[in-house]
Image (cartoon, rainbow, N blue to C red; front, side, top):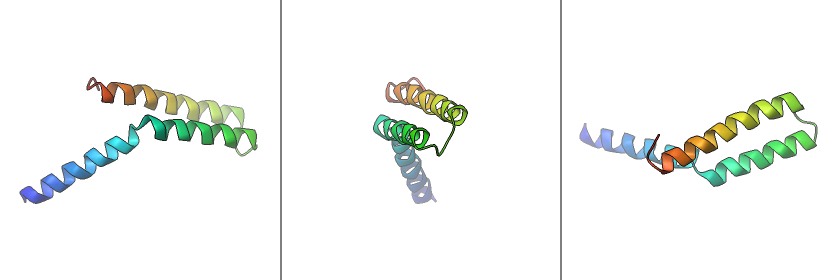
Length: 68
């Protein structure tokens, strides 16, 4: 039972590191801009997703500083 808890904590920690990795967020922003440039998404959708990614980037800084 203790081993399952440890494994679960490790999985959560790895997921948080990936989710809050600023490089991953920057790549997502770049991909979003590419989608806009190629006409895959419109300006409204771009702004919606960009806002979410910028919020995530702010959260990533807070997470890195231990203030989240």
